[in-house]
Length: 590
Image 1 (tube, rainbow, N blue to C red):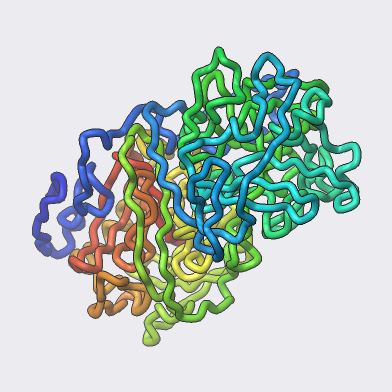
Image 2 (cartoon, rainbow, N blue to C red):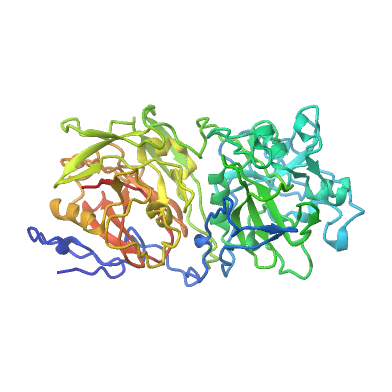
């Protein structure tokens, strides 16, 4: 017998012995946690949501080929609607509030304040390149200002997708600092005035400031931030940072500057103030001015990786190109004072995180057809020491992931061997994954949050797609010999626990500034932790209050095990209204 949940109506769970279906809750299409969200009439899901934009890489295939600067291959969906921008102040800096050249108050930062003067360009090809850098920027946005101490040049910066990005392309060429710049940078049409306004074009060796990143090489420079040609304290965007920007935008309109593009193309709105202009590229010749732009992305692979933003179809995606050397712009991202591993790779499972109180006001938005301001997540939570969440009366096994050497505790429950910790593997190139709040301290204890494509490792399993991977187990993002729990395996846990949460809840890692959890028992040793989630419509949420764990179900609905501390509930749910990122637990193959 199945009980359907309609909207957020509460339906009592009735224990029925071994009748597993009695604890399986049918699809909730309102919210993945079945809590009420504001239902503004304009908060609707559009076709071609930006949340479906995916990272794709040809890695030597013919699917992503540049020919005189023209691309072919998969393009990202062009979302309808315009996302509303909400510029957050930088949380990792202090000092005065500088004023941008437009007279608006910028984010709090330690950058130099004052006006930025830019030379005018006399070579504005067909009116595409404006007279001043200021003409490319969004005059309604408050920018921070950074000064490159190497040459004194100053750039505007803005907080987007949880990171501080330069809102202008780098124009650094001093070979005394970086000898690799010699012969490895260009101004469009070989005119320095174009560099003054649109920024400089770099090949990959110059952008990463390392000869091993020359065209055709693997560019393996470790898993941390790479400063490259960026100023001190800034770095070349990582794959994760670039993907966060792509996911946030959904379509190129909200990233494209109003000027700096061909007048025949739809005008950009530059919603977030990041001001990507149509710089074009050099690919055996200069091409694409006013039609497209690029930004280097650091990825330890042979193909050149970059963000591609196009004006004709307003698409934005991460692309790779192995066939020829290209010269494209460089945008830099401000370093975050966390661990040296940044967000590509989280802290190792053996390291300790001291208990600390951490306040967050991070925000992730989307252009999924809604133009209302998305919810900020603001809370204070105590990050427990890693290992404190486990039941000291349980004898756990261990499993080491051979891909990155991280070790996880395991537990046998009802004839199945489960991981007793959430997966923290960052190596996916399908879909996307994040640490809560883009802060790798959370990955270390709560594990990573994965979208459905990343969890099952299949790009066709988007949040509304029929995930036809068969009825057998699916390895997905799990290590060899392990699999994403089947719906029936998650369902079985709700039967064993009589639909309650306490027996599944870890002894630490629950509660926040609005919720106190005192009934956690972890009697099964599964040690589910309140890892929260990420929803493209609202951002990071529910740390310490909810646990969401992916389940594989051959359906067109995101399926997961939900543990709600406040209501002492464990149940299986489905959700397809918005794209979500949940935790992963793996089950050992039998």
